[in-house]
Image (cartoon, rainbow, N blue to C red):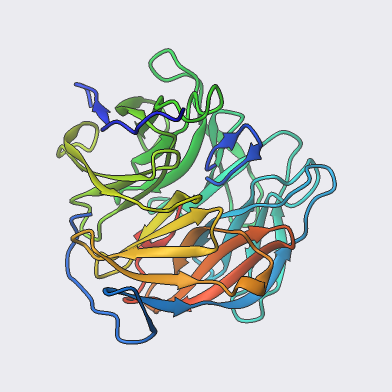
Length: 347
């Protein structure tokens, strides 16, 4: 029997995940509010925002039996960078998508990594990706050259399974660690880890998380949302001034997702929180108070079963969803409720 998700245990110093059946994906008391004005009513309070296909990016890999797009993030060149979690050696593990044409080009591959998220650093503009099975974070140029580990190894005596990644404005990295998620995967043994910008020091900020997955700062960085993939729970945390300890934490939302599981997350300029789903082709949208106000939906005939991650192009209301299923990996577009900002990249 699956265990009930517990609130985060916060340290005093302070794929989704690969499940039994195979890899999964995997990612604010915030400022401002917004009211949806378009779409079809979903229940009494939320509206439906339809998504449309931009392009098919990958097909199912024969070697791994699936494809799973994740980590959409906009680079300085305006391209949308995504990772394919299940790409085998030699296949594209990081791709750049031209959001005008939908064309995708390979940026990076290697023989060993399982990449689950991507972000560009606000300090040096380099691309950072999490290697779930390698327990490390890699950095590289936007063209995929110069790849090297910036962080790897155990934290507080335990190995890492880094899932999603988010940057504070000062370059500090925040990583969800799905450690222990495989044995069995529902045990609440995940962690939230803070890593200095140069990768030299790491601190466990919170533990006992049910497969920690998505994370997203509020627009003013006063709060941090953290999703629990196997707990269908979203926590809200505030950090100390140095960003390396948790000041407060509580379970903010319990998601009624049925057979689906919450995945990665992103925010818009108004503080609305967009939450991806595994095993359901939809994105849930909450206002800064935690009220469900919209659902981004992908047509049932699209041939995808999950919509795990989100990015909103900075300065626009053009939203993008990584969606995957038996027909391959796709990028879908939708109209967001407010403009994108740096934190609108879903990790």
